[in-house]
Length: 130
Image (cartoon, rainbow, N blue to C red; front, side, top):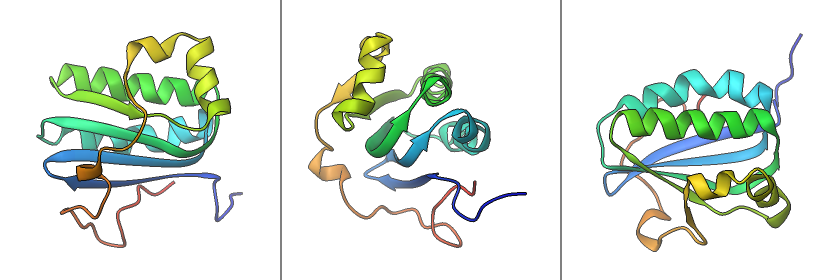
């Protein structure tokens, strides 16, 4: 049994050579389970840097933290940088309380050069299916 709206999502695009991952909704264990394989494939592609935009994330728990740490580890193994764009205060507090905020390069705002349409279009949009 499933639902048509899983409560989370991920859009990705390549802008100026950087992979921009835009997360939305609830990043929890279900999101980790569903998104991790597709994220690993995206991070495997060549490129200099990755930006994870958390501005649309409404909830973050241990599963979501695990997902972000996996992306960080996968990126580091491929010598790619990962930066997080800060989310709403209650979501960001989870990263701060766990001290994982210290493990990431954090941006207060999305860099202007990355906040726009990308140059990578995938069939059926550019969502990773949940």
